[in-house]
Length: 221
Image 1 (cartoon, rainbow, N blue to C red):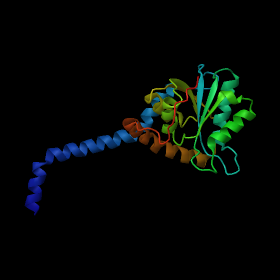
Image 2: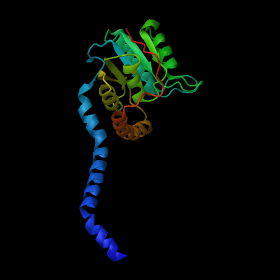
Image 3: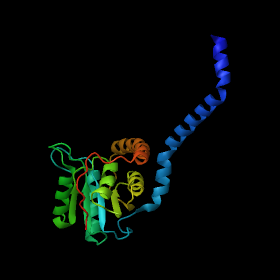
């Protein structure tokens, strides 16, 4: 048995070495991938004051509490988009979030806040099927037929959002929505989640599957 094993190892030695090398290389690349994405797409991120004019701002959803209040991060995202609108940087807001359950409505609550801050309803487009960053970007291109946009979310999320939207054909820039210091535990959780999500974003782009929910095109003219 030992002799047979030795013969097999000798025969397939090069194949085993190449396989192990490829596995280690792939693993190293995946571990470095979030850092590479952050490093490259950092150059596309602006403050609200520095942001170039664009027709549409895409606002990514986040947690909404059971009483309808927006979480701190989501509130800052919508508030930043509202400020961009009132300063004339953007003309329309695409508010994209999760609405798969009857008692949970991110886009609806985001729209309520934007309306309360003086954005006319005709300049707001809710997207009720933005369950993930990939879904939001895919639908922005396929359903709302955007070729360019400003992405509004926190700094830790912007590189992945920019990578995803730009790889799907949207010439996007990002605007940071960090209007406050967030709870340290929340930030640690967000950073860990973002690391894994950025790796998954690479596989999303390689596969480029349609978003789970599509529909008829609704161009934001």
